[in-house]
Length: 101
Length: 366
Image (spheres, rainbow over the protein chains, first blue to last red):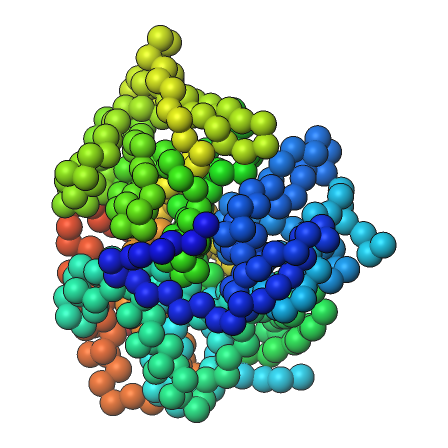
């Protein structure tokens, strides 16, 4: 969900772009962090812990906690909270430590 | 290999101020920042600052960030390397920088002086299911809602009633998000009472001597259990209260991001009043190593206003140590230190002042 009205801030998001999460089509704004577009689209689980597969969500937003590591355009372990969203990006929830397959 | 006079690591309030100051003396600066945008935490701070006019009092953090970034862009002798992480410091004064979304660009930079202004990361709190989605650091909540206009959740429990907990609670309310309650383990509110009153007037209860015991949920937070704590912060049985929340916002302090300083071999000390391990420094913000300076939260957890002043002091002294000249150097140093002292002349800074005394390397001559 996006904030509709704010007493102080005005949001001027970039161009609307389409991307996919596990092959499901979604929309976000160009240039915002991938993870922020996912949260706005209602996605809460971004990754799973390696050993017990516990769900992990958006946590630190500064690329430090590894909760938001995902596969982006085939590359695993991308910190989606500090990576900008682009048109047509292919985002996948990764399994385990991530691989290039 | 590329070379520079001063490498500044971190583009928040401390790093930006250091860069502007050192550049104004003529030094060649390379500023490296790991965020998507420069400005560090300033770019999400919608509240107005306290302090004096020189410290941007009455101006919102986001506006301060804009001013600093505009100045940086005007300086021809500042080179920017953004969305990049400094991964190591080597004995021959070389730092390695990893850049790019997939980390496939590596740069090496030789710098005569380094100013480390890496800031801090948020503390975690031990409670059952603290890894569930819906548990956020307060800074992350601010980033989502103030920078990108995204709603982090619908019903929030704020943990911590220091200034960050209070300010972020107010910002949540401004964004139209419900704050169910604020819990604070200490017997009294840590932040400014003006902030606390504003929130209470809007109907949010602040439970002091209370902490978060556990959260429930299958794939994300669905419920939280808070409980009263005694003076040793132990939960008191039969005092639990359930709250229907989907979001937990942790505002339980910050820890300096001092990894690079450790690796460089600076003399480090655990100082609880400053938030954890910090590098010892003299009053020019120089660490125990002659070529490394520090500024901002990495030198001790404080506020953006003090970070900017420490940045100026570090920038000034790093540049002068390389032979760049300024007419009234001693006077400038004295004035900046005086401004810092005035800023810290409030009851909430008492602890910080004790910590800073412990971290100070006293020089024999000035």
